[in-house]
Image 1 (cartoon, helix red, strand yellow):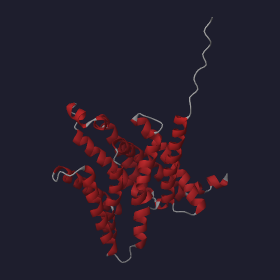
Image 2 (cartoon, one colour):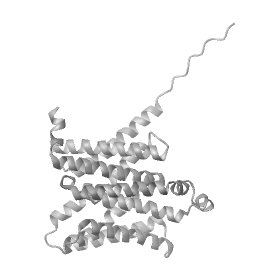
Image 3 (cartoon, one colour):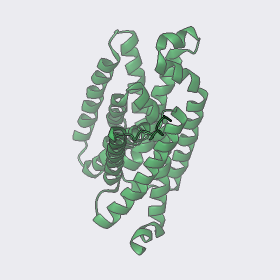
Image 4 (cartoon, one colour):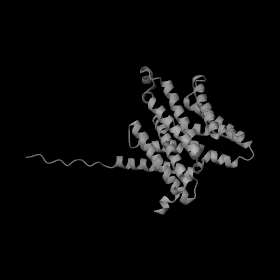
Length: 284
């Protein structure tokens, strides 16, 4: 069993595992609402929307996480402005800003001479480089995400059912939508260090999709998605260690594979004929 335990005997792998589990918990909380509300495109757009902020922070020597957060917040606010002022649909607003921010990030990178290694880390992450400070930031992000989801739970449920119902019940649907976008932004920015901007959607969406096949209640879905995500992190790290593959990409691929397997298993169980109880013959 040394092949199973040897990688996790190293401190940097232990930090990677702990950091990945924290990311899995945070992404499970935000990802469940993303699936319920059908907003997976928002997570993808925010993941790419961080690129100009990260690139500028790297070039100017500022903290990368600060640049990612600033860029994601600008994009989140921009989506709301385009929706309200320009009267564009939600998908259209996201699509415009998604392309614009991605293009801006590529422009910044193209003007920085020695950016190849940094760009790779931005796109695909470096979970094995997670340090103690990163774990602290992730811990705070997880606590903030869980607290926000718990406080806004009723409003988010009402918004998921019907925005008009939410308005009638005075549950402030616009505020609930803002909280949801904030949750996704928090998850994407905090997860960037672990799996990068291109792969963060894998942990944000795949575990929640898998969990949704087996449970209906929101809290249960979040808990199961967190477990699936944490297992994907552990298995992904183990596979990447022995197969010499990129850790972040392997974790994301493992999460997506788990979602596919669990979805297929659920489909097989639902399609299997159910045995009817054998009834005793009626007495003559």
